[in-house]
Image 1 (spheres, rainbow, N blue to C red):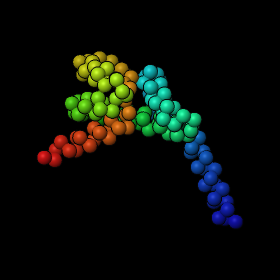
Image 2: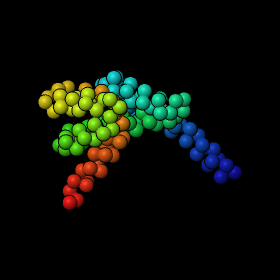
Image 3: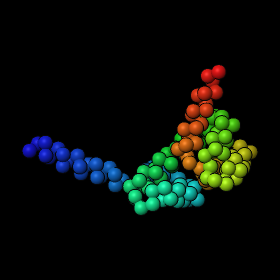
Length: 138
């Protein structure tokens, strides 16, 4: 009986956790850069079509990665490695536009424009970390 109750509680808890919706980074990004949020959302919908839980998961992960890499850059990250990662993981045909947004940001432009880049933020963060680590290994 105890085992059954624990299983039922676990299932209810799992359902509750999955139904949370947008996380804090996704909610914040939606508020400060609706264009950036919509780019991420449309990418998630294109990737997962009608699997709504995966769309939500993708949006949350992409927003987390975007916020994390921008925080790294604000804390003195390597802009060359960042620009190369953005160019590599940009949506097809958007690499030059995206690098232009980075250059504008470096030159004092509006930081919120950085979230308007059409990129795979998870892969930009991964690529940035991978390249940064490798840069000190030779």
